[in-house]
Image (cartoon, rainbow, N blue to C red):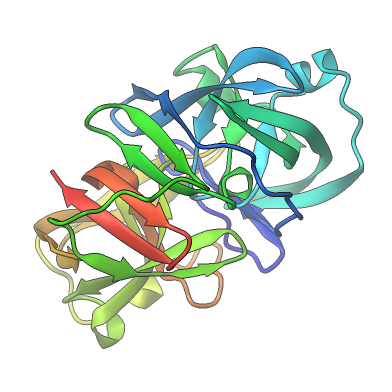
Length: 294
């Protein structure tokens, strides 16, 4: 699930993931905690309001720096597109209507002026027909936030004191264009470190083949990755050893995309799933992540 084009890109690996250029967002007004519904072990569903109506079920995807809305819901809300953007995927590209939603409400937090693209999401509807769109990181950029997979909760912080994690190691991350890039120390990484984007929409670690050094490790197998487009993209499954903060993973399955996939954006080597951890806390004030291992 990821965009890998300079201007904008979308791909759904096992579920979803897209990236587009950021759009200006005014500060959100409150902090809040809301429940998450989890599908397939990694797809996070948050209930939210749009322009004072709803609630509607949206997929929470930290691996995208824009958001999406179903065309039928956009029509029901009488949204008017401001322009169209060419969105590229692993199997092609198409121009999509772009909207600026006046208000998104998550619990007690009201978030104004959220950019959303309009596209049908059949892959998600096959999992849950109530899903009305994808909420990307562009809507959360004014928040520090915690995704708690264990208690199935999303916590948003802006003005309140941030939580303290005495048992977790602080991991400094890079934040650019509403993307959170995490250093992952790996035996197979060129130079010893992968830079993986934090992505709550993928179920497995995904690395581009050009970012892997040395010979193949362990057993390999060719697999198919479902995307939002009608076609599928082939990838290879390998076992690798890597470390994120204090969490170590041995002989862990990693999906490897080859030359047929679109290239990653500069400074990124792949995707890191939020579902690997019991909880993930992002502190926007220090550009830090705290992971609680399972």
